[in-house]
Length: 293
Image (cartoon, rainbow, N blue to C red; front, side, top):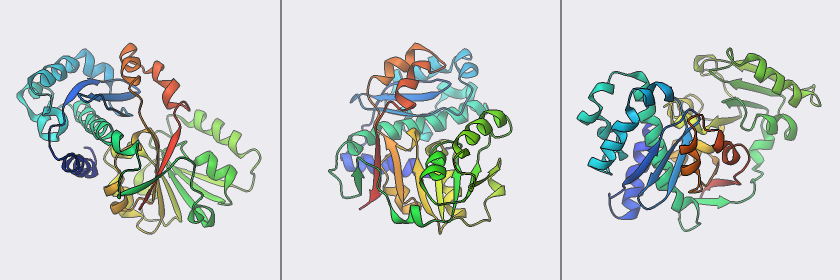
């Protein structure tokens, strides 16, 4: 299930626009990223959390195209996925995961015009990393989702107690530890502890949280913030690119993300694996930083 902050954001942006005519031009399913293009040509993209091969081989791509042709607004809300077109999918857990990713990508696309300008009173946008004092005064940090700000916290801060929660830690043990050892080689004083479940860290307190934006897609962000109300919370990554009003209200203190260029649609269509998207999402896009106004 997607995070309820997504529904609030879609409704709010529609109010800002003065209408509810958000319409989808196309949806691209993929093993790497889910991409949505709206009829106004704005594009959104988020990390995929579903088995794309299973869904596409089963005909979901065709069913999505039918839904868009029937009503381009249908899949801009969760209710739209209950349309009879999707009757064969309603009990498929992979479909439920894909639905969450699609709605997050819709929100990302809706947000792009606002994130690309400073013409809003809801947040302040920075083009360079804002060196917030609470980041550097922290003594402990929890990184949710391997990567992200983990190398930065190791190399650029005085935080010695760093915890990492990643659900795929056991399956990616060698890969993660090789990368971690490379980051730690010049910082032997740092202690990094891994968790592979939310329950392992839910009752602990941390000065700083660095949270993957894909927590919006898998529905865990609100739960994470409720468990850590006193931390300085950063939401980071490609999937974090949504209008941040309700993120800030929920407890996020800073968002680190990117704007999504329209060229990603054609590149997403070229290959299910998403190999043509790495040029964008693995260092190819400049980051922007959003703070409460």
